Image (cartoon, rainbow, N blue to C red; front, side, top):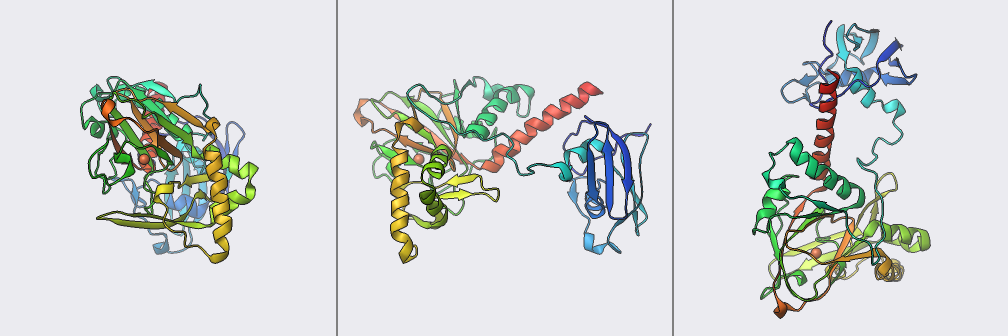
Length: 406
Ligand SMILES: [Fe+2]
């Protein structure tokens, strides 16, 4: 019996349901699965997604085929299911027989995909209040695990899930050595460098270049809305905290935006339309970007919020938009003050909070600088990195499933 063909990727595709039958017209192939599902695939789609070495570089599993160089639109001259359970298609006019892995084919069944761009983990908005707190996990020993190992995954997987779904997780019992955040962050992905450094130190310091580096209170905000692409994730790692005050405050910007959409639809529409000026005109740098305060994706779901009163420049929108924009802004600001949205907590040394900086707002109470030490280190990592890392976790799970089936 022959093996199943390789797939045009490095993922693992357990065959949960086998192919039962196949029929085809020149341009559309229809398969019947054993559970009754029927899936259609276009000939051109199949041709470009074959896993053979005329289509994909076997070393990189990246496509090398240029469809426009085929002699004609690829058509199906014949199709069958072979002894291994793979779909075999003969393409004309190339007269090339290519095999497709049924697990891969089922996972890429675009004819039956209800929402192909659905998030990896369902997004759930949350409220705060006095009894609410972040999902909290004991991550002791994370840095002692081998990268990519099952032990690392056991700690990381639930953390990634909380960040993807709720935008926030708190890991406890991490090391408290300065700069250990670098190694921790790299378990998820590369750090995004900024003008504040790869790792930045959040503590009161002389001649501060940000309000963050003082002991004053910070209103709810997202970091660096002044950038075309503002950082996806922020990590804050507590090394020392013995001051009076300085409690952390976090709220789910998506929950606030949804409340706005429901209660004040006009204000919501205005904030998704009017482009605010975000500016950080500091002593030695000058970052400016225009963007709406709330952005939706192509599906109408929330993509990001950009909120930081101290980093808004003078509004330079159309004349007739100015008053409605400020009215909508103040409606949002009133909602942001509602304590029902906020969770409050005090950092313990060894705590590491990871949150979606394009979704969550963070704030801080003022603290008494003379009463002790408060030292957090922070860094940014892109959303892409956490999604990639989580997909790798899922791939490892599928691979284990394959091994168990073998
Ligand atoms: Fe911040």
